[in-house]
Picture 1 (cartoon, protein in one colour):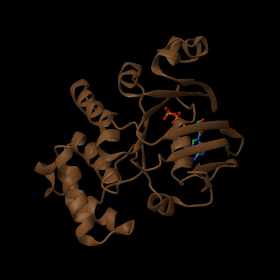
Picture 2 (cartoon, helix red, strand yellow):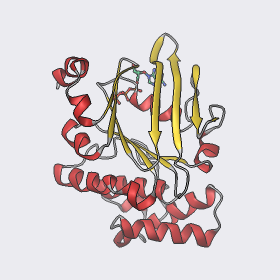
Picture 3 (cartoon, helix red, strand yellow):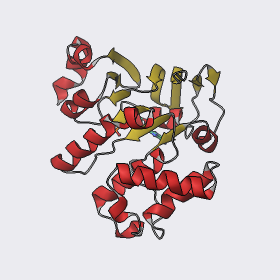
Picture 4 (cartoon, protein in one colour):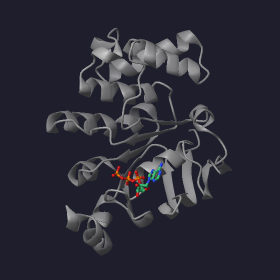
Length: 241
Ligand code: ATP
């Protein structure tokens, strides 16, 4: 079969003035898996997603895609290279329909219109969103808006998709349903998923591996079982919950 793709952070530092958001983080995301990214508030999770998707240049260190340094690429070029993401706030074009948002995104990353429309329809169908395909985005329910944001990322057929708290603001039932969907992304789309999520129980059920950040540093990385039993993690993270 195809070679498995890998997205890595090597010794990534990000400083905002005197604030060290990330201080020497190594991370590895493999195609075909879900990697959880957890840590207390301010740990650096969103900054890490911004770095991996080209929205934030590391102060030091590099982002490496399949062995190639891609640190200099901006978000647009990284998206074309196969690194997609969703945002904490959905960032959809509010006066366009759901279907149009997905199609425009596909065209923006270099697809032809028909291929982009086909990819959009497939992803909407898979996510149970065909019922809102013709709806304008400003008429969507909150939960549908969050799901459409993920669908838009998937419609670009990325090798990697980075999801920053996709279930924030959802109720328990919506969250469970979304996590069930996310768990199946690798087998359906063949991509690697990086998932930021605050609920430990949720993340333990969905991820093959988990990376724990604390104060801009890596605290632990391993399987859910390994991370759950890590004394540093229990002290720094679980103890506060
Ligand atoms: P949360 O769970 O609260 O979303 P997080 O783990 O995602 O937190 P980040 O948002 O990455 O953490 O923030 C890490 C640190 O960097 C925090 O101290 C934050 O205040 C700071 N920070 C993030 N972005 C900026 C910025 N643009 N300018 C200044 N400081 C920033």
